[in-house]
Length: 252
Ligand code: PGA
Image (cartoon, rainbow, N blue to C red):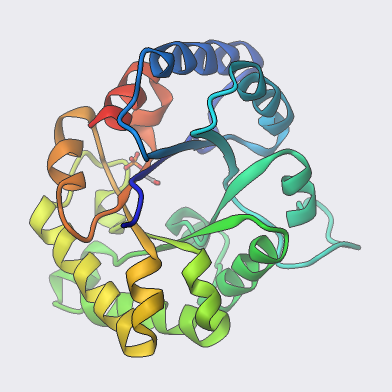
């Protein structure tokens, strides 16, 4: 059985004051009781990881952990502005998002680079959340499965059976931050296609890997999405900024 995992992605949002309020509100809400066997995390900007790590230690709920939004593909050295996986591990990160479409588009990140980043996270004992997904044009021209298969194939080639320790996030680019959520069935179909592709490589890996859906997940569509057999949780952007909405999605 794969556990349901809900991860918030704050993107470039937050402040010392609002982070403290957010964590306190979410902790208080979660202390009232959460569905068992699930995991929750949020990915804060780098400068706030130390603060957020302390805040969640104070609230000490084993199922609420911290993540980062990116990591360097290098271990250490002359890489100005980059952050190594070992540093994120020291900040108590459990998850690291790699290959988010905003990084692929704005920073020209390739599938090969994304796989290198995932390896760095794995080597430091963290779980990479590998993002894949097609653009609106790619879907409108009927190439969505081909595009996502291509992205997954590159990850399989580099990560091999270490993929079993990763999460995949299917995030159709046209659904990110647009309010245009994929229907639960459309998302399920792509998640199924990804799992079948992984099974071509290794049936064990395919059955272990959690595949999260991301793209305009809100409290009112989370229940239907999470009920799908191949959707193992969500990567939540905009709605994760509001602690009440994040809590409602975690409870869905
Ligand atoms: P969204 O973002 O929930 O705001 O659509 C999801 C993401 O980018 O991870």
